[in-house]
Image 1 (cartoon, rainbow, N blue to C red):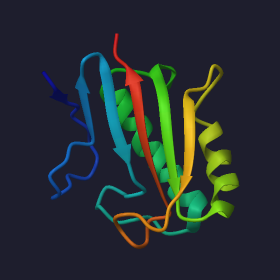
Image 2 (image 1 turned 90 degrees about the horizontal axis):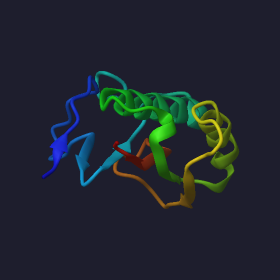
Image 3 (image 1 turned 180 degrees about the horizontal axis):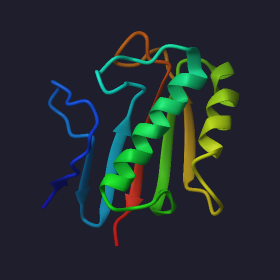
Image 4 (image 1 turned 30 degrees about the horizontal axis):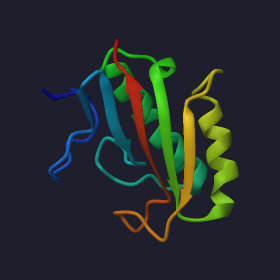
Length: 124
C-alpha cells in the first residue's frame, strides 16, 4: 500500500504527491518553486538551492534524513549548469553519497525551470 508524505510545500493543482512511501522506499520529485508555487528567479544556483531545500524538507517530513537517500536523478536544461548545481548539491550530502545520474534535457514542465530532481530513499 502506498502512503503520501504530508509536506508544507505548495499544494499543486496537478494530480501528484510530492512524495510517496511504498514497499520501504520513499519516491519524490522536486522542482524550484517557492511557497506560492512560483519558479524562483536568479538562475541555476538559486533554482538548485530551492529544489534542494524542497527536497530536504520532504525527506524530513517523512521523518528521514538525507543519509537515507539512496539515489538521485538530476535534470538540468544545459550542460554548463551542472557545476553550479553540483556546488549546491554537495552542501546537502555527506559520504557515502547517494547513487546519482545527471541528464541534460531540452526542457522541463514549466518553461522557466532549469532543474528538477527525482530521488529515492530507504525507509526503515
